[in-house]
Structure formats: C-alpha cells, structure tokens
Length: 236
Image (tube, rainbow, N blue to C red):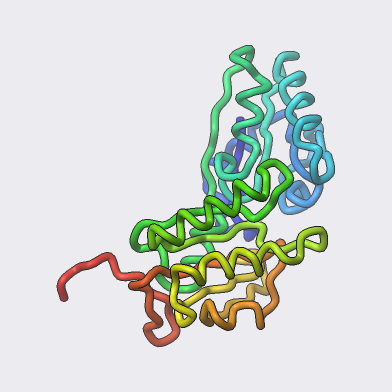
C-alpha cells in the first residue's frame, strides 16, 4: 500500500489512510513523515530513510512485501503527486499487488486556506530540478502561463536553488499582469500555518521556502475580501 498522509495535521489524514497504516506490519517512509504518525507505529517494523532515499526505501518496502509482510509506504500529500506511488509501481514490477490510497494534496490544502483559487483549470509545477531538468521546468512554466492557467508551484525555493522562484516569476510576467493575485501558504494544514495574498509584482517580498505552496492566479482571478477567487464562469 502506498498511503497519502495529507499535508500534516492528523485531521487531514483520511480514515482509509489511517486504517491502512494501522493494519500494516511494516511502515516505510521519509524520517520527517514517519514522525507525523509516531503514535501509529508501535509494534511495527519501520523502514525510514532520509531525503533522496526514495529508491532505497522502495526496494526495501517491496522486499518486505515479497517476504509476506503487509507494507504501508507513506508519503505526504497524495502519494501519486510528487510522491512514492510511481516508484513503488516501477520497483514492484507486478511481483506484489500495489494499492494507492489518496491523500489531501498541498495544492488543495493551500487553496482551501486561500479561498477558491483553483475553481477553473490549473497547472501544478514543481520547481525542483533534482529529477527534471531545469530547462524542462522553465518550458512548462512558460506554457502554463501562456495558456492562462492558474499555476501552483511546489518546492519553490531551497538553499541550493534560491533563484528558481525568481526566474519562474519573470517567465510568468511575460504573460500575466503584475497585479495578478498570488497566494502564498507556508505549512498548509501543518500547524502554525502562514497565509498571504499578494500580487505577482510583490510576491518575492514574502518568505517562500520548501514548506511553501505558491498559487499564481490567471487573468480572471481576483481578491474577494479575505479570499482569493478564480470564478468558474457562473452567471449570477
């Protein structure tokens, strides 16, 4: 089983995901995510690895499953969105059954805090270039902005790539107004959440890091009171 933990708070883990973790004899995951469910791991074998240990983690999890263990591999958010579902399926190669249990995504958690910025078509793009060439990421940003999509930016800034978010903004400014609403949410549904609604012009004035999800509106997105809204087009 590949299990989505949601953004972090226990209230946002689905009952199906909780049942899967409780029923497992082995739980595998990134150290930080395992800490979120520490109270659920009593009596279970643990397979914990560090960041960038995904291949090792997947191999160990499949090995345990081949030995007859019921294994839950946990991912933050949804395991099929920048998570462990894909690599588990690749490593398993049909040798063991795989079930993917969905979770609340960072995009949907951040959007809920902001109001309704994703009511119409949107694109989700990770600014990490660890597994995708930066040139490809830039092409995707350009295409999404040219198509007037709302754009959700995952992994927007780290110590190793402090300027990717600046370049992404520059690309989007070719197509989007500087006044385009932008929502910035840190630690969405993970306790001590921080939320800001600003503009594409001013977005870099606020803290953006690896715990942040950035949502850039389209040409129809506007601010309604305390909310960011992308109307779907209903006649009122």
